[in-house]
Amino acid sequence: MEEIEGNLLESSIGWLTDIIVENLDNDKLGAWISQVGLADDTDKLRSEVDRVGMVVAAVKGRAIANKPLARSLGRLREVLYDADDAVDELDYYRLQQQVQGDGLDGHGAEEAERTRSDAGIASTSRGKKRSKAWGHFDITEEDNGKPVKARCIHCHTVVKCGSDKGTSVLHNHLKSDHCNKKRGASDQQLDPSRYDLML
Image (cartoon, rainbow, N blue to C red; front, top):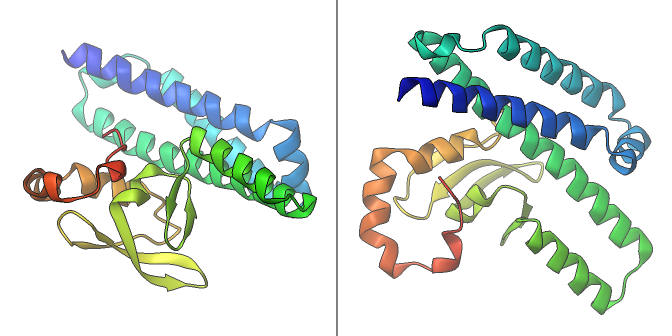
């Protein structure tokens, strides 16, 4: 069983690194990133993701018998999920700017919203968030339009969700025993459309 878990962990990290680099290498996104002055930052991200890929390739198979290494790889995978969310958000902002710049009529705006929905972009009352985890939280505090604290709709716990933490804080909270118990007790009372997050 440990061998399967170790292989899945390594495979998922490899998949995430490939996806992030592939998305950053997208011509349209790359041109927009240069236009808005984020090329240096995304180059650093690409470099770090490439480095992660090399490290995971070097430790291939060792996480099976090494629990501290497996835990470190698990944390690394969470960071990569956050990096993937950040790249998705960049692409969302590129699309948003394109839509607003094209001056779409109501029909075009509806089509853009449907595209975002098909891509799994969750909406909140305070704006668009890429990760579906946001569907389980209400933002309680913001700083310059960015969420700083959010309250879980299931157990009412307030978590810090600053941009430096990404969405791993939200995902980890939703996986916690405390939240799972409260969510199990209140599932029938809440809107089922907010439960499309796969834990």
